[in-house]
Image 1 (cartoon, rainbow, N blue to C red):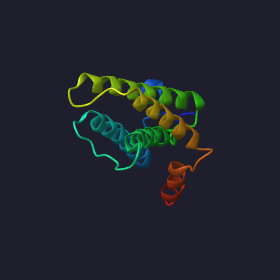
Image 2 (image 1 turned 180 degrees about the vertical axis):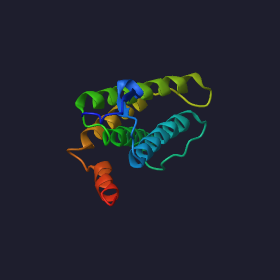
Image 3 (image 1 turned 120 degrees about the vertical axis):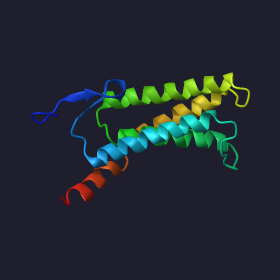
Image 4 (image 1 turned 45 degrees about the horizontal axis):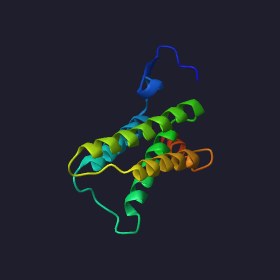
Amino acid sequence: PPIPEGRHRRPLFLGMSADDGMDALERTWRCCGWLLVALVIIFSLIPSPPALDVRAGDKLQHLFAYALLMGWFAQLHRETRVRLRLAAAFVALGVALEFLQGLTSWRSYEGYDMAANAVGVLLGYLAAPPRGPDVYHRLRRRFLSRG
């Protein structure tokens, strides 16, 4: 989309960009998204992360975490090209974290965890707007139209 005069795009993660005039909602949404990324990294590398006490709870946690990451950032980015970059980045994050777990003495490498991460990314991609609810833009209309 065109950028208002006096503003310019600055590069962000993976070639994505945002104009310098990000409003409070977008800034908050992005900050919360990066907090989610940080939590995934932390819970992936700490010795004893919280566990679901159900069959295959570990895989469900992986699936949910990566679906949430993908779905969260896909709310901001409608372009297929950007969403595919996000998906690739989150799959790569899951693979990298799994290899890092294998290097520790307190966690273990599991190929099925990487598969659960990738399936989660796919589900997050498929659940994003226009197929799924457009939470970000709904909030935007609700709170920013009051101006």
